[in-house]
Amino acid sequence: MSVTVAQRRPPASTSAVNSAAARDNQAGLLRLLTRAMGAPEELVVELIYLDSKGTKTRRVVSPIRYLGKDRFLGLCLCRCEPRQFYLTRCLAARLRPAADFVMPVPMQVAS
Image (cartoon, rainbow, N blue to C red; front, side):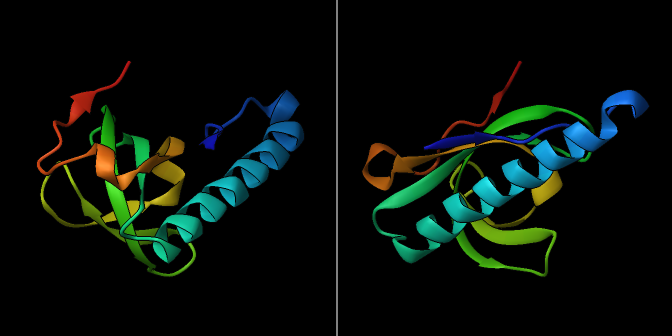
């Protein structure tokens, strides 16, 4: 299962359509995260994440819990430490078997 999250600042002419798509994509992301949180030994989430400097990176995360409505805490398998992730910066996500990864997972710049 994968989800792609729409960009946050759509052109004015399509803002209503893109806003609805962004809500649907965020709901899909929340379902993926919740599913992974319920099976931490079995599932992780592979993300394309936009960092604070605007760089897209591929990360593998084991979600731990939500930190309010806009972010979650997860064990980043790339950095081998808990990290805070903003939902609006998650550009794409998919569930992956946890058994496919061993820490540290190389963090890659995504195109």
